[in-house]
Length: 451
Image (cartoon, rainbow, N blue to C red):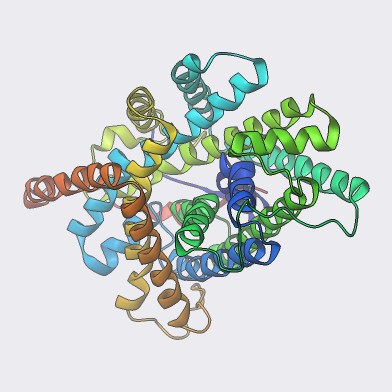
């Protein structure tokens, strides 16, 4: 075992990772829910456009930081360089106990719900099926980065193929003068609460693009690959979500079901007949499986970055020299995720990890404001229109954290309390000198590219 990470991820593998992780359990539910609550095509497409632009603003900052510090760990490295070890430790603590297991558990529950819908199983089996799905995904991850990259590419292609099929079916079936669905009682003014809910859902649907920053040490030519993959991946996802929303509005005009699940089933029935509900359930299963693989692949890189500065047990982040996987670190994440699956529902798990994850996402991106930008650095990408992208992105982060805190106060407080516990722990760990595991000089060397 070693801590050497090889540069194997090319542009297509990086884009596939973004598509695979972002387009997960919310691929159908978020557009469906947005159409059901907003109703107006202009508002729906406007929300997607705004969220896409704001995500691109954050991605530009992460692309610059990732090329300036092309090390495993992403946000942990950026916080360490800008604000010091203690702040970085809190991010790592949050990743280990809140974000990574929370996201893994949420995806596992989403996968279980659609698997049971696909095969007609009872809802009581959701925890068991979720845990089984997480274990299978972790086994694939531990086979190595090349195996994971293949899964990411296949699942991304499958998602885009199913969505293309749906859009083509809408175009072939559609009536050009049809009016879109409007929610019952909708008037000229949509309440701020409805808009806030739509923004919160849209942010969740875009969540995960920043995890590519954790893989900076394994990306071929990061100065070229990171900006293209981040911006291109987000643009692709924006187009996909907007297209799905248009399809929903076009097909289900005047017949908006009361729930998101019913909305998806109604779409399939309207296009292909009642049997199509299984087709869409299978598509969501593929989408979530790809997201699980992406999350489990990226998470151990943060723990590796912590171990390199003596903040995490080194034996847990020993990577296989050929497979480039860290089995022990992956198993820690899987164990914590399985505990969360048994303790909470899908919505409760979201409320537990999203507010803290978003807060630290904004803080790590804000590192670009603290550290001086070196002029003429040939290996670093420079975000255009600085500091406008980071200012815009931080405003979005504050809005999303506030919305979640109001909508799910109990779960938000629990997540915040877990993160706060990391502060006294940080004084114990950082006060005592520990042997560090510096990034090896060979980690930046080029290797086989998984494209």
